[in-house]
Length: 404
Ligand SMILES: [Zn+2]
View 1 (cartoon, rainbow, N blue to C red):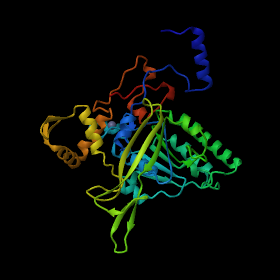
View 2 (tube, rainbow, N blue to C red; view 1 turned 90 degrees about the vertical axis):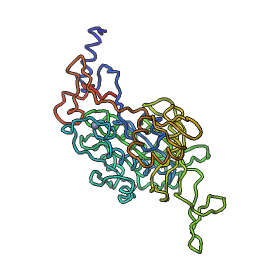
View 3 (cartoon, protein in one colour; view 1 turned 45 degrees about the vertical axis):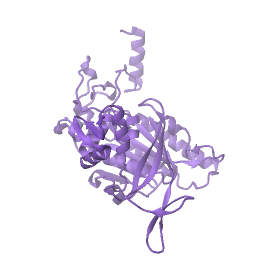
View 4 (cartoon, rainbow, N blue to C red; view 1 turned 180 degrees about the vertical axis):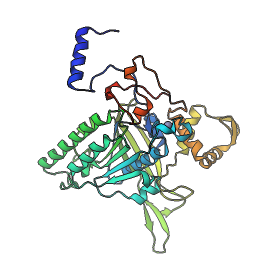
């Protein structure tokens, strides 16, 4: 299909005026994802947080936003930094991959590095920025998004961007609120533009503390609505059925649900977390689901682990990967396993195989990292360029891709 010369001239002129911003569609979208580790969330997002885009995670205090973002860093470090696949499925040439780093922009100055290591983060490949002002935080985030050596950046959190504003009161002055909203709007706009460059394969996860609205009917996202519509994915976390651990006078630990009766602590203690994908530009529709995160070590689980065996089992049964044979015998990928508990035990004993199974159920496949040869060689992008090396004639020319 050939456009008219007049239209081609307009495209050419605009492209000349604003380089790298106007091109023909390629019909391709980056399929790479960074697993969140939450099975239902990864499944809804087709594998996890989308690469080179902004994911906004909001939640009230102690809704495990930072934990989820830290787990994403650990998962990103575990996988190939180029194709983002689990190591078992990666076929990238080791010569084209290079060490890449994660950055946490700790606006709140509360990031716990030891805790991050517990969650599986490799400190050798992590940088932590502690900006002194909202403006400095924005500068960090913007600059880092444009660095070929950083694969993931976490901003924790937008609500803390203007430190002088008292966040515990929802009746802050309109001037202060306006200032922060402008700062956030600028940051989000700059990030969306900068992340959209294949040469810089950075993914942004931005956290925000939600405040209850005055009418009690909803939540306020500090910093205005811009942050939501400029994010590719907006996730809201809520904890429910929160329990507290009560230490009795005799030293015994009892778990006490709010308004409920204390009971002895047996096994790992879980926090029930609900996530709502408010909107997503990388998958269809909004989703609501729940998951259990371990917050008190026990039964072989450590803090931050997600007990998702039952969730995976249900989906695997629905898709026919796990089939009931007779009695309590099940067929799992051609192997006969006795009882559902046996299947669970098998998965627990083989974490790598279990991770691959989950990735498969999330729509990822162990395919090859293939280069599609485009009709027009000028539009090609080789792995080297995708990895940030070599010369580029312009980011708009990109579109040689990773295919499943
Ligand atoms: Zn790879």
